[in-house]
Image (cartoon, rainbow, N blue to C red; front, side):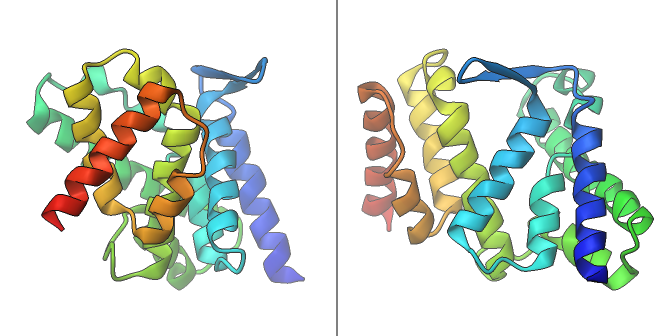
Length: 201
């Protein structure tokens, strides 16, 4: 019972923090704080991919991007190198922030360290929890952000980004991705990206 209580306490703290996101997302006519909504959907996908997900993975799913709005992209210089540094700094910030909340919720250092490993996506393709997380992150993007994204960018850029994302997923992730509803263009870009991966495979 104690473990369940700690998890519920942590979930509530994560959710309360993410509800402070000043950015919003509208889904099916309802407006949500963006990171709160995406964290809930990430958690849903993790449990769908792995119904027996570990406690550490469940905790990581609810805090993977916690406080993302607090380090905006425009606080870094333009360009790919600065973008990659922003992404690295964000990941460590999420891990730190999640660690603070987990400690406050009663978790020990070993438990916190495991959650942080998943948040930082260490040993992708080798760590099954990290692979589930990567699959779920890509599926959240495809399910809730992709259609708006591909309409704002050139086909070549969209396909290249999809190819990089799909490469991080495994075959199970690809199968889930193909079950989602897309516009004809959206589906075409995904099929093109998968075709490029198969050719190089």
